[in-house]
Image (cartoon, rainbow, N blue to C red; front, side, top):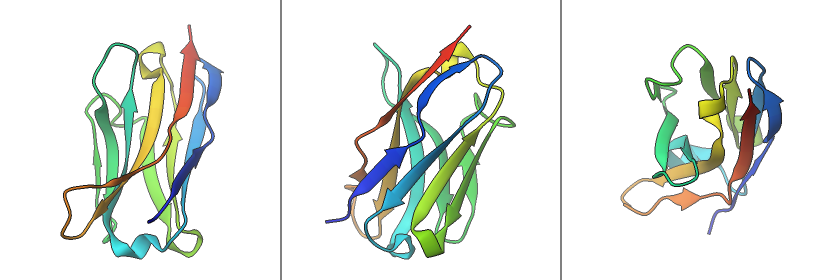
Amino acid sequence: QVQLVESGGGLVQAGGSLRLSCAASGSIFSFKAMGWYRQAPGKQRELVATITSGGSTNYADSVKGRFTISRDNAKNTVYLQMNSLIPEDTAVYYCNAARWGSSSPYWGQGTQVTVSS
């Protein structure tokens, strides 16, 4: 069982930046892809960004040009750099690791991001 631990959330003013980290207890090489999802109060969880084992990235339209996902394989860590934050980015952000041959990904416990106007 792999554990994913998110960190880096907090309260920031609109226009500010945060960097989220997701540290895996095992090698992230073993995952097909890793990603960040978010869930705002009263809304469904939604995709924010993903990065494959080969380094290909994908972003939700709402964060393109503002957020950047990256990975450090040596540290078994995935990052989400969030710039130009807006109040609509307020949510709990979850790290996700998609496994080869399985439809059940691993999830972290989430980290709160709050953007004030």
